Length: 384
Image (tube, rainbow, N blue to C red; front, side):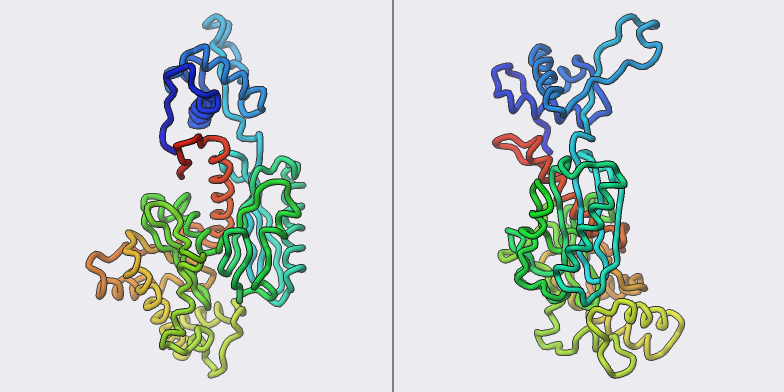
């Protein structure tokens, strides 16, 4: 978020509250004098705002350190932002697993919970597994459901702004599912639904391999790869939410499907059989000729698909993640291919977050929403 200042005591109380709250959140604790110096507000204004934030439960006065009063006389009152005043959830809904991350209002993760789910499970069963994971996580953490301020959820597919999955071929019964509405029945707070590759891109920018880059392409490399892109630090969804669907590029003259490319038997792999794919990569690493040929075909396809997106967006960095084992083998071919076509090839790196990337990105989206509510005022925008 851009730094806010407030030098005039007649400013709207909302603006002053935002300025003070932001200053307190940026430090462990602060005195009234320190808050006054940082914000530019008058001391009486700061005192009034802090009292209001304490009443709202967002700020608390901290106890003086033991012995401080005896050594220095009466200590200055110190205050801190109450990150525990609310909580956030980041959810991942995938073909084989549902998972949840719980965090406080600082984004500090307090607990995680995951449950396996069968790839053929219908939507109702998948969502029930997710609800069970959330209930268990909240129970273990001792957090009341009413404490949740926002929930982010990430899933494969093209997601509409209202949380409807317009197209979701990776999960049975997912196309047309009003996922935001369904999840909203379980929570009394805003629910934000996002594509999984988009969420992973946000996560890598927040805590992963892309913390120093604002123009990033994240490749979620599975049998049907997807990609998320940040342009100028902002998530690029496209007009209909379908930006980054590079898994469909084989339809443009490359008819062989990824499950055919990775086959070592002549019969296509099952589109959602991650274990079978992992075995192919493992056999390739062990020197099996057919498996190595299959992996080479898969990597060539992936490299071409990513190159097309890079040529369109000109990112500074490409981050490769996903569940398939052996993805490190894609880095050098991708670098070589990009060097052939790009005037200034982007850097290429593996994901630092691994399987945590998608739920972490969903959590960040929930945190963004809460920060907009807590800190944004008219004419300003919360930023990561």
